[in-house]
Image 1 (cartoon, rainbow, N blue to C red):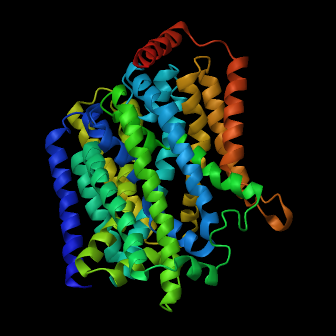
Image 2 (image 1 turned 180 degrees about the vertical axis):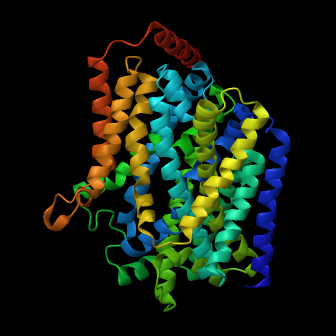
Length: 496
């Protein structure tokens, strides 16, 4: 590895650890500060934190690779994500900020579900917590695998060394500084990703000096055809990724943590601007990368490495190190968010409820830190077997969260008639539908239904329909629930 690359990466890692120490001094005295930053995030930090934790390595590896291979038809997922993220900011963000505060100051999604429906059985809390812990442990493991492979392929380092370096830095700043550290590092990582996705395609385009369209047409005549190779069902499946936003705990928790409901419009503008530019830059990296490789006779064995390849060919080692740090930033920002959400469920939804109801704030923060380490160790153990079948579940976790939680979050925030039984039935039905769609060999030659349409579509519909029908058949919610709901709605109306 060249000295310039090492210097840039070292500066990046030191910067992340420094932010962790800063956050440790700011807001880790109580569990609300450790797990939710004291609900004090400025809109820019909340927005870029949500974006960076959302996109992961897919933004710099998967999407440029898809654009490299398929052309503009690969952008349908991005279009769906933009629409879904905008609706999430519009529908969920302001309501969740107000409702979670009015509903017993809930600081986790399972906590909100339980308090919103006054569920003394803890069924909603325990089921949603189990889903979060299992899927996010797998998600985290997948991110660590990506970090290990990045060190292996881009830096020529040992996979295990890359795995431990990635995990070590993320765990250190997450464990020390909690939610504020995760959010501030996400903000910095979001800025790095943004600059990288503007810089790489522009410099590559300037180096080519024109004629990109002709290069693309020569190697792939359908590169600029957005409908090439797509069917109506294929477009629906791709755009349906946007439905997942409403149920992703590591994203919507930023809505709970923003400073006030008055900051939500600014958060939305910043977040959507960042997302649109980043997605356009990601697709442009794939396009320009294809033209660059074609004109210069470069064989690209793995299209998903086109960002890495351009970074190494076009820039000074110091800048290359910065650009590769952007890829690490995409991976690490998601890992840290998932670690903290898993930790919050273990601490708030298990330890505090079932083991130590009278635990002090200091004890809860200590348990939160220990939980970060525990989840990370399990994820590292899984990541030592990157080809294990268990990691295949990660590809479906977005659909699982979206179908299990998405409709329930929307209905809980917009429909006061939703009942505890309706929410529980919808959550179970949505999860079951996604699992059936993925694993039931009901088609010819044992094919699963997910080969026809993305499983989030039926899962989301079944969850929403079940929740509504069961709630309508159920008794009306108690007066205390309706009163709390109306108090939250009054605050929202005053803001409008």
